[in-house]
Length: 307
Image 1 (cartoon, rainbow, N blue to C red):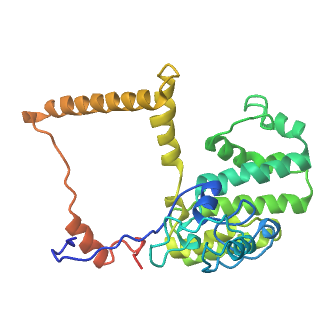
Image 2 (image 1 turned 120 degrees about the horizontal axis):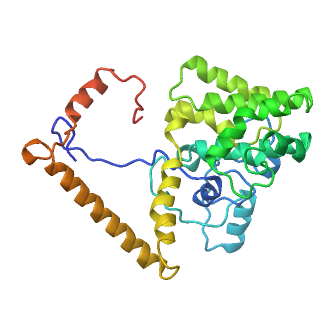
Image 3 (image 1 turned 90 degrees about the vertical axis):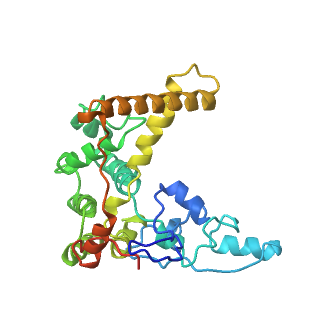
């Protein structure tokens, strides 16, 4: 490929980040359900107040079935020996599986903190305080990310006075950690505060939060890795077109629906272009040479670096 200065370069695309929820991460990392996809921790270690080491690399031929399956059992692997990332140099699931806001922070609150608070305070008290959300939150069969955020805003006030002080302190520390982790950029002091907040939780914080601070150092702010776009895309390109059909031949009808919507958008863009002065479309052309000069001169110090 040609760089902005016109020189030809050999380009090798690195695998920097793969945004997915925890079940998909386990499949990508080829690990079992009771283990971590990014560390050597297993289900019994998730409450440890330390970060466990990254997975190690081992090489055993699948032709030796007994030794192969014994190694898989020892290292909590699912016996997949040819993952798609195997030929990417310097690639490891512990590095490219980055924490993700929707599932690893907000969904984690709903699956753990919310249940802890309901157990300690009682479902009746929780439902009474959140009666505006239908009939409370304990009976919700499906909750969106917005519901998770709404409950997080009030949960400390709801359990205050009804739960032990040390329990409230742990929940408050987890909540503060989640809010700090959503910052668009970090200074060294902010990262230290985030790490101190996590360490103050102590035992029971789980395995996933420990990967947030190392991910900030290696990949930048966690805010940039979010499954929100893909989740919304799933609604727009799968759920809505399927509802527009007759519940038969989903694949054909969904593709036909998307094709017609795309043609309508193209026609609308064409008509809007013709309405412009002179009948000419006005397009913005980005100056990548100027962007390169700005990066070289340090105009954007928070920009991620390829090394």
